Every structure is written in C-alpha cells, then in structure tokens.
Amino acid sequence: MTKNRVEATKNAREAHQLNIKRSLEHRLQVARAKGDEKLIRQLEAEMKYFG
Image (tube, rainbow, N blue to C red; front, side):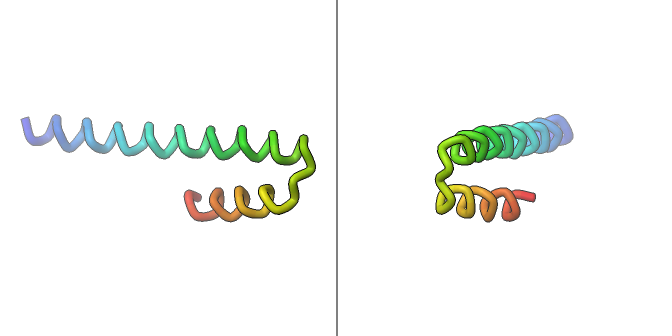
C-alpha cells in the first residue's frame, strides 16, 4: 500500500509540473503576441526555474 501511495504522489507531482509548464508556455505565447516585454522576461525566468 505504501508503494502505491509513493507512486501516486510521484505521478501527481509530475502531472502538476507538466500543467505548470503548459500554462507558462501558453502565457508566454500570449505575452509575445501582445508584445509585453516585461511579462515575457518574467515568464521566461519562471520557465527556467521550473526547468
């Protein structure tokens, strides 16, 4: 049972990280389309943080 919980936690963490990355990528596309340089720099920094 403990092994299942560890695996479930790992899967949830990976899914959460993937969702964060997808969200950041979308926000970056929108910022680029609007030409918002300040937001672009901020989002690029966040993407580096999340790897």
